[in-house]
Amino acid sequence: MNNVIGYHYSNKPNLNCLSLDYSGQGIKGEEEKRRKSWPQFFIPRIYLYDSQNRKEPGLGNYCYQVELTNLYQLPIKSGCKISRSIHELAQELYPGDTDLFFTLFENVITYGYNGVYNPQTGVISYFRNIVLCGG
Image (cartoon, rainbow, N blue to C red; front, side):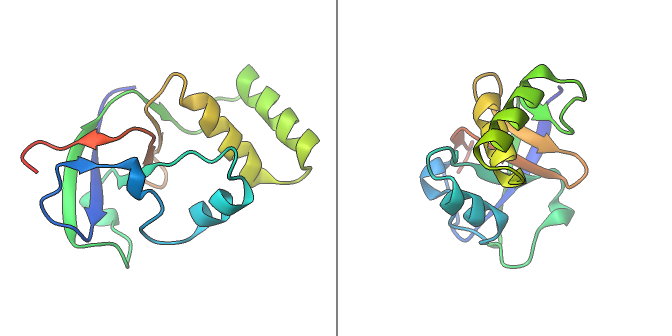
């Protein structure tokens, strides 16, 4: 897919890098649930938005704009063999748990992509550190 401009909000000014070391420091929600439920599979990530207008309440006021490359764009393609295999594995391990499916899917995505982009929600989950210019 083409490059996407992402916007990340932080409580800290003048950052040089958006680091995975700080994954989970923002708003607690579904990510925290998945992190606790599946620590052996959970991948740290940096959340960004595809528009400055999508900022959620509770995020910091310092906005960092970056160009992101090599993203897997949702929705998951229908008929995708990898997706079917992961879904079968997740259902075999824990029937009915949809959080595990997406957590395992993200693990597979990291082997070929830098992150996942959902254009419906405008959210980008990025699985690499991001060096900032002029931070």
